[in-house]
Image (cartoon, rainbow, N blue to C red; front, side, top):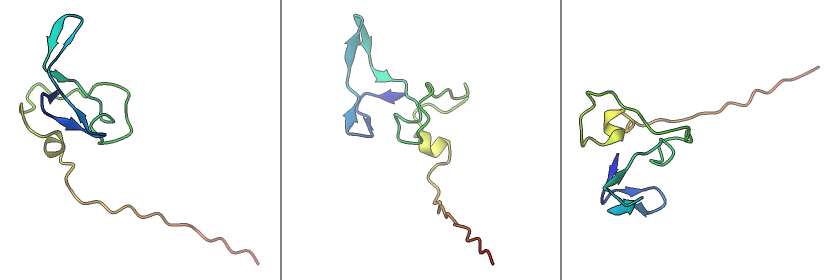
Length: 78
């Protein structure tokens, strides 16, 4: 959950608001809303024992360095 004060990709800041007359103090997010992946199929569900207040990137160990390499095959014909 992105809590009040969180800033999501695109400079979207989470603020206290009322939705349908009820107070809202955060937003449940998909991976795409957090800028983690293009998967916007639904809200992220974490296990019940996931630590509250921990950064999702830290919890999912997403702060590692990755190098993506693409190789183009060259096929030679005689």
